[in-house]
Length: 100
Image (cartoon, rainbow, N blue to C red; front, side, top):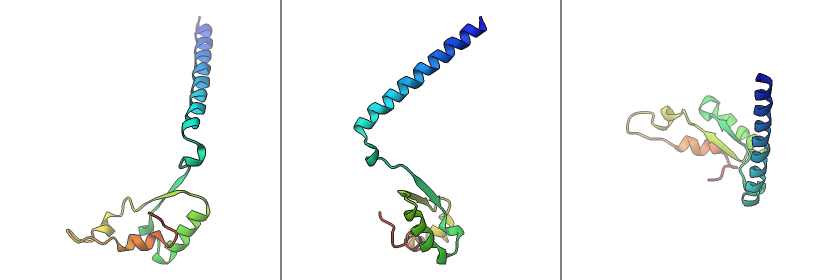
C-alpha cells in the first residue's frame, strides 16, 4: 500500500514539475531573458579601505554583475551623529562606473 502511495506521489510531483516548466516557458514569451536582471552582488564599502573602492566596483562591473546592493548596514556612516547626515562617501564608493 505504501509503495503505491509513493509511486502516485512521485508521478504527481513529476507532473507538477513539468507543468511549472511549461509555465516558465510561457513567462519567457512576455519577459525575454535579455530584459531580466540575472545577477547582483552585495558590497559593503564601509568595511574596506577607501583606496580599494574604485578597484572593487570596477571588478564587479567587469564580472558582469548588473546591480550592486551596498551599505545596507552602514547607517552609522550615513548619520554619524543624530540629525547630521553624510552621504558623500557613498558617491565615492560607487566609483566612476556607477550609474543610477
